[in-house]
Amino acid sequence: MNGADVLCDVLLANDVTVCFANPGTSEMHFVAALDRKPQMRCVLGLFEGVVTGAADGYARMTDRPAATLLHTGPGLANGLANMHNARRALSPMINIVGDHAAYHLPLDAPLTSDIESLAKPMSNWVRRIAGPDDVAPATEAAFRASLTPPGVTTLILPADAAWGEVGAASVGKATLAPPPAVDMDAVRTVAAAIRAAPGRAGIIVRGQAARADALAVAGQISTGSDVRVFSDVLVARMQRGRGRVAPTRIPYPIDAATALLRDIDVLVLVGAREPVAFFAYPGKPGRLVLEGCQVLTLAAHGEDLNAALEALRDELGIKPSQQTVFATAFPDEATPSGKLTEDAIALSVARKLPADAIVCDEAVTSARRFFALSAFAAPHDYMMTTGGSIGGGIPLATGAAIACPDRKVINLEADGSGMYTVQGLWTQARENLDVVTIVFSNRTYAILHGEMRNVGVGAIGENARRMLDLDQPSLDWVCLAKGMGVEAARADTCERFDALLESALSRRGPFLIEAVL
Image 1 (cartoon, helix red, strand yellow):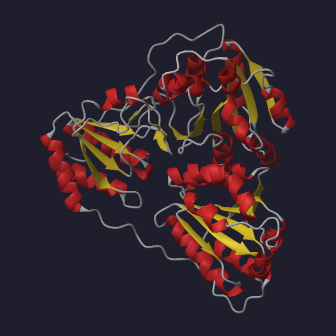
Image 2 (spheres, one colour; image 1 turned 90 degrees about the horizontal axis):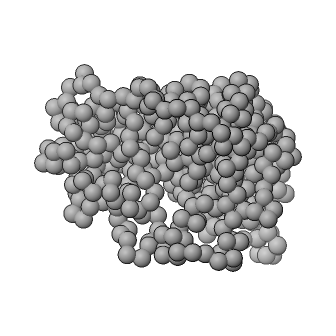
């Protein structure tokens, strides 16, 4: 048995059964070992950003890590952007990065690089395997690190550690420590602060606190103690839809965010961090909360967020039978017709969304209305790219579909963002994944036009326009999708879009709608 076999065995023993991969020569012994392990599902991505983004989507839907297989430092570097998004989403992930044999490194061959330094900024944990006998303990350590608390881990596998023979290796299921007990001092402090600020307290929920059961408790606190419930600007995963408590998402634009939070004197964080502006703008604040706002942490990532919310509810004297407000029916609104618009797409998708669907939203500016409408849609899971690095949407949907093959996945995708990882469509076709991709084809980086205004530029010239617009030539998403093996069609009216969406939702397999705006 060689080191590569042991690595596979440790992963499988700990229920890591999916490997998103783009391998190279240094990883061939690991590829051969995977070939001997039919229990491991191996999914090829044609670009490493697809690999790491798909692992992120898989982890968000399963709360378990997948493995990735990347080729030396350059392969890792290609995947870093979506590792960044995964790290910001607090997703568990085990990246396996192949490297030269240890004795070959001093020769400084062309692919030699400082993998540790590349990995550290986007990883919570990094370790280089010391040799064949270190494979088992290092892999188990990587698995533990990916879940305690959940986060991105990177394991560097030298080629000689992979092909080297291993003596008797003890492979078993790792035991994970339970989350720490609820901090009752924090509970009492938060409860006292809420009582002292009636009607001026808010809670931000994230992670496990954004699941339906925890949201129900947050809703009871909201109703029983007049506390507002918010979510992050970028949502890692939230269970949404009719019959569920619907937090208000903090908006991306600074002025809108500060206006939303200006009446909040106490802000309670549950698995979340204090919200801040994405960027610095002349004359605008970096912190979004009111000056003097008391920001308190009830429970942090890795702690039992649901239990912490229940403890806070009890400390506030709110009974578990407390009723709360749930979203019910859509607002009365006419069905749009004629020329297709962003709002018409958002309304159509929300109304037609199948029960238990998964929505991956990387439409950036184009689908901002969808989140509010999704509160009235059928129950579903909602995810966004979380680190601000575009190119996560198509891979995120790919990983979610691998994780949940019996659920329909809808990817709301901006055309500029989609081009970063368009190769993910090929993986969807190869794996026959049940993903409907809706491309908002406005042929521009619309968000950057807004950012030019935000930094004080009133009008742009030809040089700036050529850097912000996606025309001359315009992208043809129908041809792009078909070239990747995904059936596709174009809509430029509300009626045509509705018909295509109905058709795509009624069948299985990947389908792309280019929504021309």
